[in-house]
Image 1: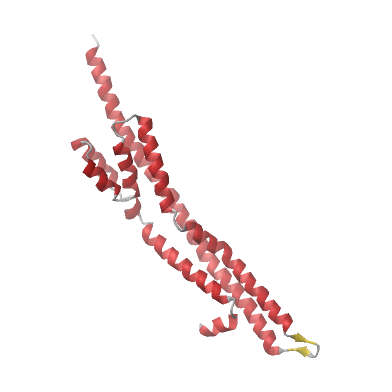
Image 2 (image 1 turned 30 degrees about the vertical axis):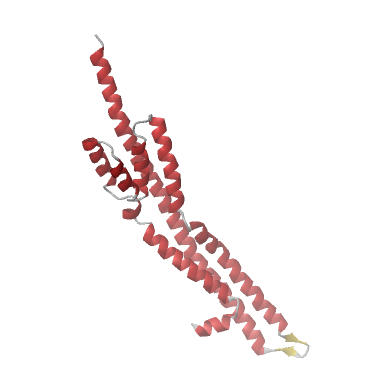
Length: 213
């Protein structure tokens, strides 16, 4: 490995730095963007059960908000359960946008790495070509300088592509996961709103029928 780095020349060092950052971001997002961390499978059912049994209290809301991004969205809805359906939806949407932004954290950096790595490799290729042409002299080519320039050009091009491909794959993968989580949170929030305001609508209709002669 060290021999390859030596053969690639100094332009390989920015690529190595970018690759380390990319690997760190991939690991961090892979650990963070797991189902149990974002949308726990039974959380909505538990929230609905607690709401139907004992209503809403501040302790439940605070605990729910610390649970997960889905918990934050549901907690925002419960905080506004006494308001209108529109007010409850607005609070949920505002919290949902913040949660989606947090889930997409570092993805822009990972996408930038996927885009910039081939350019850094191309820069190394240009440096290698400069080394090749700089080694030419009126008396003939310097074989050592010629070989060095070719190695710089090829190794950096290969390294740039090798870094860009996995970075792009994981960027697309994580972006798709975030989009899927946003859809799941929207569906759960809609079910919470329908449950709360549906019950109120039924109760209001029953009271009106009883009051009518």
